[in-house]
Amino acid sequence: MMDKKVTCFLPFSDAASMAATVRSMRESGVADKVFVVGPAGDSTSLTDMEAAYLESEGFASTGALKKMAAATGSRYVLTYSKGFPLDLGKFALARMIQICDDTGAGMVYSDYFEKKQGVMSPHPVIDYQEGSLRDDFNFGSVILYDALAFKDACSRMDVDYSFAGLYDLRLKISRTHPIVHIQELLYTEVESDIRKTGEKQFDYVDPRNRAVQVEMEKSCTNHLKCINAWLEPQFREIKFEDQSFDYDASVIIPVRNRVKTIGDAIKSVLSQKTSYRFNLIIVDNYSTDGTTDVIRSFTSDSRVVHLIPGRKDLGIGGCWNEAIFSDRCGRFAIQLDSDDLYIDDGVITRIVDAFHEQQCAMVVGSYRMVNFDLEEIPPGLIDHREWTPDNGRNNALRINGLGAPRAFYTPVLRDIRIPNVSYGEDYAVGLAISRHYQIGRIYDPLYLCRRWDENSDAVLDVPRANAHNLYKDRIRTIELLARKRMMGGSKKQGLND
Image (cartoon, rainbow, N blue to C red; front, side, top):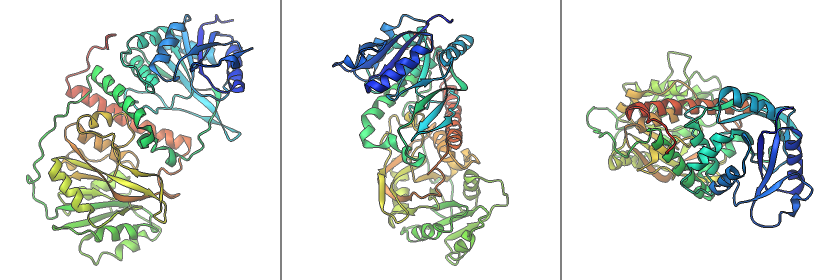
């Protein structure tokens, strides 16, 4: 029998759920002490449970974590972050301990079974890497820490967070220890959030979560400074007249099989009013559903450029490259998805004006979420106000997207180019641009984003969602390494950070 090596912590919830979780932890055979972490008040619901009460406000707060560290006398710390019953697999904790020992990890996490609406299914998670800076990275609800790493990280917490304590803990541990993913299904958790992936992805821009986001940004900013990857708000100068263009602006629409929506998108572009020349470049990626015929019905208008690539291996990013390297591309390349509509006839003018007024290489606007009938749906306006001129390009490494619609100064975009993928290509190029150039913002809605079943990210299964997140984490890792090199290499990472 393995020695009892683990101090376990779980949040206060209903008595039945806590009892089931405590029982599962005790049955592991390696739990030393079990603590329920909760606010001041009646802890009588712990009667007859083999658990103690640790009084603290907020399970993810800095104060709670410091109290957990002080209460730990074992070699390992286990946190379970949900209020629903936990069912640990047989020898699950012993396996986590074994791998933590073998790898010298500061924290380990695993795949798990997810019980949603009574149905149990496997839920794999992804590997942690240096660029896994998202505060919503899914570790699952069960994490095992090396107690010394846990205590050390807590001792370096010099900011009291109400919401970002666990995030801050993870970032601090990552600077001194590996974070290891066990690709095994070691426990079962209950999932109460049954929303589709497309409904969850905007939680971080919900105004109700603003206080949380402010704390997360502060913690991430401090982390970037500690690893010498934080960039000051100093940018390269932009000179828009260095090159000549036949058009001041080009709207670019990559499209494949959007016969239901492409006509409306084209009309919204052609209705734009400007005092200068603009065109519309549609890159038709071998549509088979009638989309091509719809596009051709508009080509009598000289502003419509219909491109069919010579290659058949292009994703959305590759289609963008076809457009921006065309000699008919204008000085500013402006995005519109084939599903969506500009909100009025002044969008191009507002975007081009923003380039000149803000002296930036990229402009990101705002949009309003609507259904197929153009009726507003939650969360409504997506304006990404977390982007600030002083810290936006640093905070961009924490969030999962930069917003839309996006527009680019074409020479800069041609120099960087867009990855030939169909998800995350906009985020990748936005991060690369932000490394050197200012990104301008427009907080008024510029287009209507239609959500419907054929949207690329409306409903994703776990493997596809994982693939998307893994790619964006990889993009962040690449960008992080580039910024470290630009700053002259990483600081020696000690304990005084």
